[in-house]
Image 1 (spheres, rainbow, N blue to C red):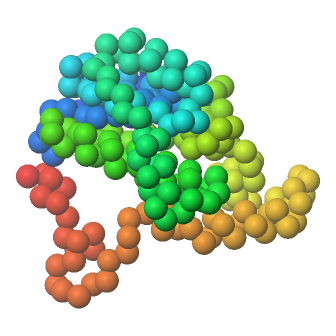
Image 2: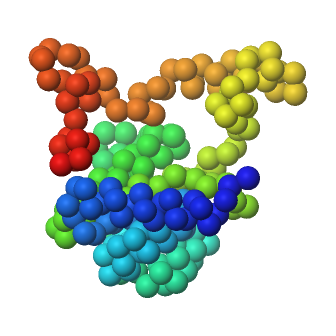
Length: 220
């Protein structure tokens, strides 16, 4: 079971240490109203002070009112500066130019990338680091808010395959259809590029991410 107090202290010190190493005094976070926002924004406010945490809300046309309300509650409780940028026009413009008939998955991919692009662009002026978030295990269903009804936990097979490291036959035994188990397993195996930095070909004696790291990693 997660020790909430310990996790809070670890996250607070982690943010303070990493931001201090890089140099900026501010961070920017996108409060989506999902379950990843509070565990990121709260320790950031404790580590750096609320005035040094900028919250950028980026609702889409499909964003539900509950998510927007939850995002406001988080920022108000933490006394964060909030800016709102509607991203629907940007997504519509891109898809109208190239993919007018894009399905929900492709629209969702563009939504996620547009939010990250806006967050990085907006954080550059105040020289803030972007604080990215993930899901914590609580009662609210995790979702990236990519389309109406979209959920990150719609398929429990991922839990068995990734967290429990089940083999195919172990996934089928609890009642999952063999075809479904094969499909999900193939998707996980075929998408490692989404879970790690790009692999860099080594063509010189000093290759980034191989034998050369940023100076802050040397403690200087």
